[in-house]
Amino acid sequence: MAKNVIRLDNVWKIFGENADQAMEAINNEGLDKAAVLERFGCVVGIADVSFTVPRGEIFCIMGLSGSGKSTLIRHLNRLIEPTAGKVEVLEQSMPDLSDKDLRSMRAKHIGMVFQHMALLPHRTVIDNVAFPLEVQNVPKLKRWEISQHALSLVNLGGFEYRLPHQLSGGMQQRVGLARALASDPEVLLMDEPFSALDPLIRRELQNQFVTLTKTLQKTTVFITHDLDEAIRIGDRIAIMKDGRLIQIGTPEDIVMNPIDEYVTEFVQGISNLKLISAASIMLDINEETLPASMDISVATRAASDTSLDNLIDLSIASELPIIITDSDGKDIGVVNKGTLLKGIKGDE
Image (cartoon, rainbow, N blue to C red; front, side):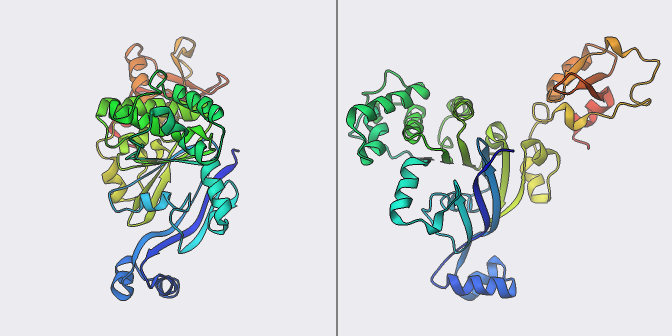
């Protein structure tokens, strides 16, 4: 099992002068967000949040504006201090780090990319990427070598000496990603980095980002308000509402098994065709699903991770059920036309 790189245990963030008193009242009396605001004049930003992120995972946190997702991600590099709870990154307790150790953690181990990149307008692309290394006193030739490599990773070779205003929005976002990658951090924090871009550019960057982070094995927490984006790039998705995590699961889990009406509303309109896999809808192999009289030697076989979309194409080509196989090629299940129709409709 992959080692957890990020761990949050029962994290609370309460904004206001009386935050400590509000936290005590929450623990003793179970006050809700509205009661805390009325009695103490405090705002509950994060409420009892716990989760872990294993190494190499892209963990998407999504929710509407004001749900607490951006507040949450800022706890991971201690731009915000928690009111209560534990925040650990790379087995280090973030609230307990000294100022020196915190600067080192941010500079070497955690990269962050924001929606608005705040590139230095008077510096060239390569100088913008090299800036964090310059702050670390890395020699000029070394930081330029590192920055050149980071730019090549995001397909910006040849643009090293352009100024930011000479680049498109998507290219500027790539510069920001290259800047975050330059120090080779284990952890990437992405706060709605693509939300301001045109749809086509956005999708291109999403695909490039997934390929890049999987290749480099970066552990990533990705904030978005767009479920389509979360489904496209996330290994798991956490849905937030009013500072709380409502549900955590794989994209398939979230869409097929929403935990409540709030999540159900979120996933309405999401197509099952490319999301649901054969493993989720297949039936057990038995006399009812595969009668002994049926010659399954000529039946089509498909891997357990085959999408519903591809299963439909396979079903059209044959009257026989589709036999589902595991990674070793062993028959483990059956998908027939009735099962497919239920999968398309969304029935369990």
